[in-house]
Structure formats: structure tokens, C-alpha cells
Image 1 (cartoon, one colour):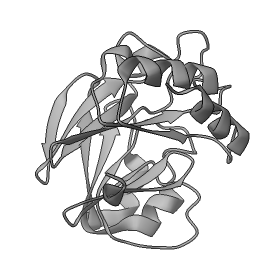
Image 2 (cartoon, one colour):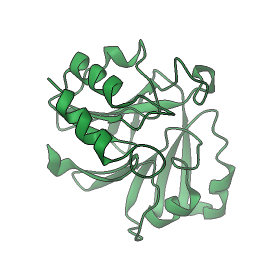
Image 3 (cartoon, one colour):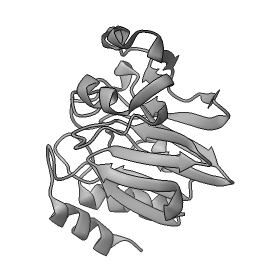
Image 4 (cartoon, helix red, strand yellow):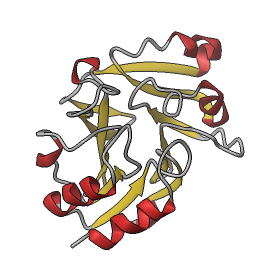
Amino acid sequence: MEKYFEFLNHACIRFDFGGTIIYTDPFNLTESRNDADIILITHSHFDHYSIEDIAKVIKEDTIVVLPEKVDGKELLQFGDKVSTLKVLPSDLYNVKNIKFETIPAYNVNKAFHKKEFGWVGYILEYDGIKFYVAGDTDITEENRKVKCDVAFVPVGGTYTMDYKEAAELVNEIKPKIAVPIHYGKVVGSEKDAEKFMKLLK
């Protein structure tokens, strides 16, 4: 399944679904690729909605998917190269023949990501495989119900789940592959990722 994705850093994953290229939350990219058909933004914080990094991946006719409450006016600078799609939590979408579902992403015991903000994670489906990108979230009633084959979960703590909570979620939803994200740039370290992996059943 790894042939379908490349974890770049932080919460940025590059998917290649039969030549359709999708990025989640481009951030701190060291090179310009300008190959994105779709960009999925989980929320408006600088390390997830970075105009500088979006500029490094967009091409003609890129669609940027945003939670409804993320303004998106900064994208106007790209003119006709970019179009936007606003999405709601807990809904189904089909963009350029790529099916995806939005999952609410929020904190339950801290105030950085409130449920009422309407921010999201995504479940992408391709070739019979479901890929869950959790976004900045704690364990929630919604993500406990996620069914997926590959789960990308934050492990850095402070603003999201820590590595223990991330492992608890993964052990509950039981994907075939779990990938730790959201560490090493803003919060958390590689040790958090290593500790996470040791706790997996």
C-alpha cells in the first residue's frame, strides 16, 4: 500500500492514485513540485494552511478543498489556476473521480481546535483501499468509528493526541498500516513516533 503515498513531513502526505496527485496540508516543503490535482486542507492553522507551500504544489486546474469555515481568500492570488471546494464535517464527496469522506477533527480536553470550528480529517478511497488522514484531533466519538486500511494519526501532543492516545485510537480502529504524523516540526519529536509504534498491537 505504501506505493500509493509518500509522507513528506508534519501533516503533509502526497498521494498518487493512478496519476491523480493529492496533497494534504502542504507545509515546509523544500522543493516545488507543482503537480497537485487536489489539495486537502484540514484547518486554517499556519502549519496546515500554508499559502507559501500551496504555491509549490499547485498547477493548472488544481482544486483546493477547504473546511467551510476556512475563508480561502488568500487563494485568490492564484487566479484561474486554482478553484476551491468548501466541505462540511461528516459528509461524502467526489472530486476528479476521487471519493473522500470528511471526519470531524477537534479537541476534547483543550481549546486549540474546537468542534464548532468545523475542521476536518479525510478518508480517501482508491483501488478498494481507505486512507484516513486524521487532521489535528484528539480521540473523538467520530474517529473511534473510522474504518480504514491506512491511518495517518498525529502523535506530537500539545495541540493533538499524544503518542499514547494515538496508539489507543489505532489499536481500537485496527488499520492494516499506521503512520505517525504531526511531530518534529512544531511539536513532538521522532521519539514520539518511535514510542507510538511500540505501543501498537
